[in-house]
Length: 156
Image 1: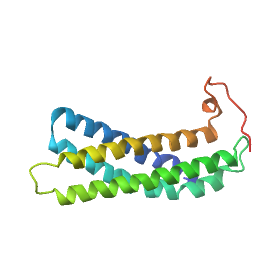
Image 2 (image 1 turned 30 degrees about the horizontal axis):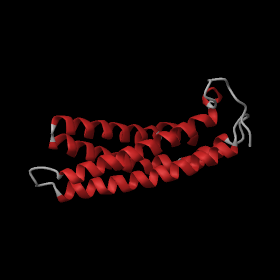
Image 3 (image 1 turned 90 degrees about the vertical axis):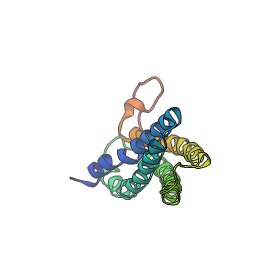
Image 4 (image 1 turned 180 degrees about the horizontal axis):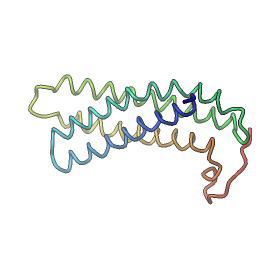
């Protein structure tokens, strides 16, 4: 397994974990379930932890694919910048969620302000993660580089 393959395997965890956590928190509000709030916050902690290996395999993946035809260094750097911001934001969300889980582990319920603020932050993080993932996909998938689905050549 090379670095690009490892990066492709790992980068889905924080992206999908964040989206799954958002869905869990939304469901928790609909069902008024503190257990689901805690599970959602736990998913954010796990997603944040998974972001580190995904992020740190990116540089090696870049070294592996940068010499391939049709690969744009500009696209790679745009993805790298977006991924860095998304990873930092997810780290903040994971920290906030972990603090909430620790502070309210024995409480009968998670305070509403904590779950609402976690959900708001999680939605922002999910958007950042989706953007980073989309930019990463465009590096090697010319069919998603343009809105009409027509493959566009990479340009530096």
